[in-house]
Length: 128
Image 1 (cartoon, helix red, strand yellow):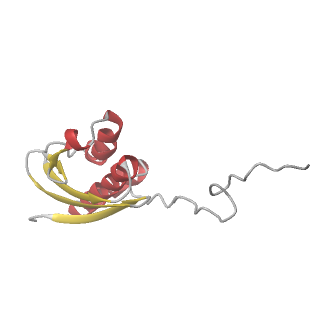
Image 2 (tube, rainbow, N blue to C red; image 1 turned 180 degrees about the horizontal axis):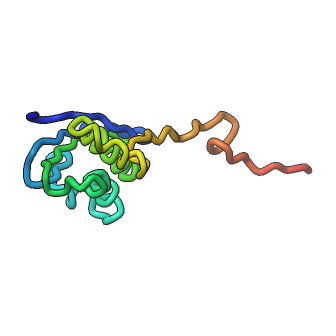
Image 3 (cartoon, rainbow, N blue to C red; image 1 turned 135 degrees about the vertical axis):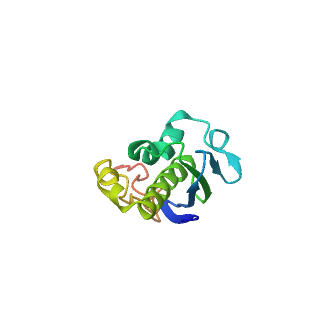
């Protein structure tokens, strides 16, 4: 198997993850993974699927991600990598499912309503 591709989404971010046999190098948008996600929390999110399945250092991961912010992009990368692992080895499904890595987080930002400053916040009410 040369290379597998999978898509992950979170909030308004979309990530395409490409996995191929290699040394464990992770590249996101042509930048080093630690450079693109400077915080340890975001880095952990992306590597969790590889760690849990025991495939760290076995596959090179190339990700292109667009839209959203840091949290959404990290979540999208995580889902993309998890789905790509599934395409490589279907037997890893149980491990990924146990760690809740195959579920798409469907939460989105609620839209702002007219006559209000935000989605749920209301302008101050004055009785008199």
